Image (cartoon, one colour):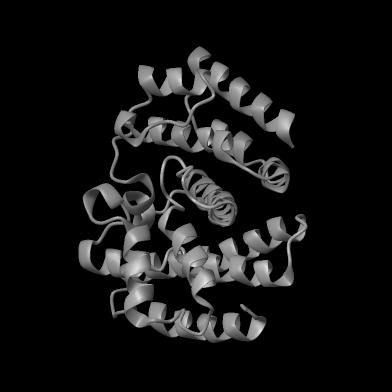
Length: 260
């Protein structure tokens, strides 16, 4: 069974592994550190959500381990491709699973727990959680997806409020700064649906895609955290204040309020 001892052992390994990618290039290092810091906050977020659920101490430890390794592939991805955009490089979730299997870092856990961890990591970034997964796999996958989104909201809100040239390409994916809202993006929001990556053509569309993440949150505490930290309001303030945007904001805000 997973224990705090196992988690601490894995955390020490994660620290050594992630820091091994640091170089003499300060700009490169800031991107690596961005993902290290993100990982630590996702762990805190998953602990927060888990504390509001009736789950066992063992499941809490499994949640921590999943959060610790969910973005493990980001370091090799950025090292090899100089981007965090999966569409321009590799699927970072699949890469994380491959690294964990190659390094055999999960070998100290029972096989069934290894399967749960790898499954949650493998599907943490897909558009929709596969229904054919077991109930446990779906639960942990939804847990990491919520925790991940919560911290990505923080990262993007901080950047949009105080843009940092170092992160412009990695956070905004190199998209143009057009203020036009694409019709397909608008329609998705109006239908309470996630925005498809293939439908976004600008940073404005990308921000709206992030607003739409509220439609994919799974736990009451997740809605509460997003509401408490005012991420939706902050994102809206960085978007063009048009009639179309007002409808989007109202739709997302009401959805959030009704579920928190």
